[in-house]
Image 1 (cartoon, rainbow, N blue to C red):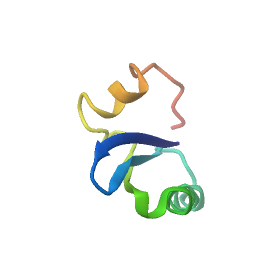
Image 2: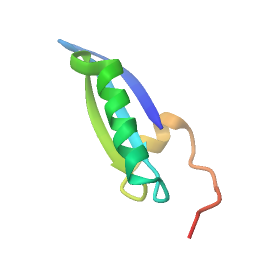
Image 3: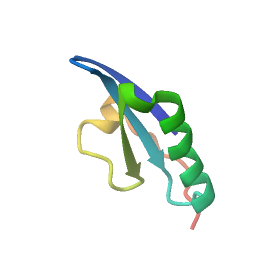
Length: 73
């Protein structure tokens, strides 16, 4: 998932989170990062977040509460 979060500070318009799920194919993870860089390049800071390493009380708060979902083992 690619999630832009606008900010009101200086030259940087915001942060773009690229969330990579545990079961994603490595090529798809790389593609998501490339798409985020292409779409938001210099105006946003890009931060890649892997599933399970989301910042406490920040990442999921911005998206809404984390809901249960099926995991691929």
